[in-house]
Image (tube, rainbow, N blue to C red):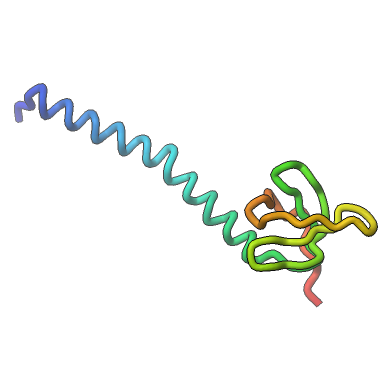
Length: 93
């Protein structure tokens, strides 16, 4: 099989896009799905860390936001997307 320079260029470009997909796009989609599952599984009483580094405990869950207790009598409202991780889940009763 004899490939011309044009065919080789097309194969090279397709290969680059495939590498880009498997090294960058696919892992990012996986992380987005994991983050969405974490947000969906969020419960009152869970300890969280926000993307800004604020630690607190979830007091109330609304549609797009959560109210977090960061200190005694100090409640702050954050977007759900601002939650980086759940550090400790409240035990199911």
